[in-house]
Length: 113
Image 1 (tube, one colour):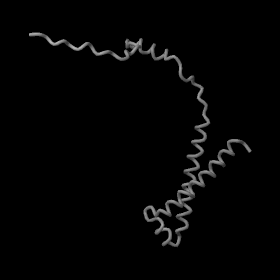
Image 2 (cartoon, one colour):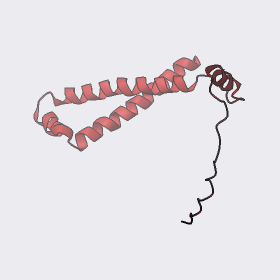
Image 3 (tube, rainbow, N blue to C red):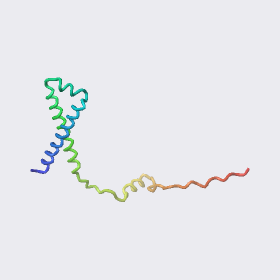
Image 4 (cartoon, rainbow, N blue to C red):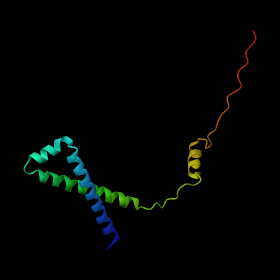
């Protein structure tokens, strides 16, 4: 089986598990009186099924997108000597060195008078 298909199936399984947990939590915690609505209606199981399926699609898609984005390789060099920044600052006429700690001048002496 191709590796990408395997990754997609795993993402779907994780999304379904998250969906089942999330739907169960919604019903158990009675968010927006959903437990009452589902249990008092004859077609309440359809609402539960729709919640599960739509959350499974959502969580599976997010899981797959995260896994794909984490596979990206960054080919740009990281770190470095900041030579590009210094050249830009010098071209703008801005000094490239920023002074560090500046000492306070000596306290002024009291004048006699």
